[in-house]
Length: 168
Image (cartoon, rainbow, N blue to C red; front, side):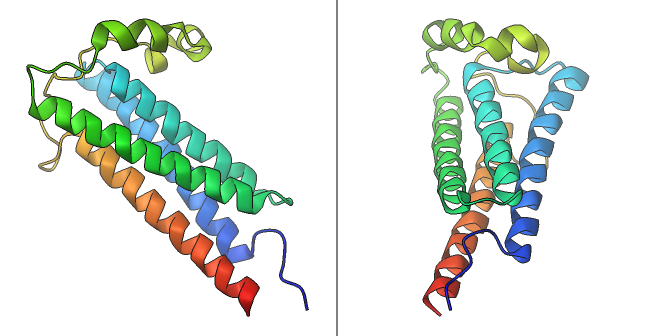
């Protein structure tokens, strides 16, 4: 008997949960930006793009089709890239004299089409080294790292579970 090509029901629910969580993390960052006037830096905007890309990949994978395995791997790769950006952001904040390249990254980030379509969400307004008050003891880049790491673990678990199902 051949293994299923598409996603199982449990995997679809997991992928939907990951997509919703990714979208909610971006919504939370936007709320913090607007309610607390904490302007996003270039690395913050990159992390928003990566969370939304994870949401896109996981929603499409949850919808089914023959490319579920590829979308799982793309989601995992994006989560790992997001974790790397978050680690870089944490490093920049820990070394305030060392900027994230505000002048170099801002024009690139601000020239992307979404920055023109939705400026409040994707337009750079701050510096990466700016420290804002922590939330439950963690800075926003640390929370982003927690989010990307949790997503990577969940996706890795699903990929491993799917590999076990296929070998059975």
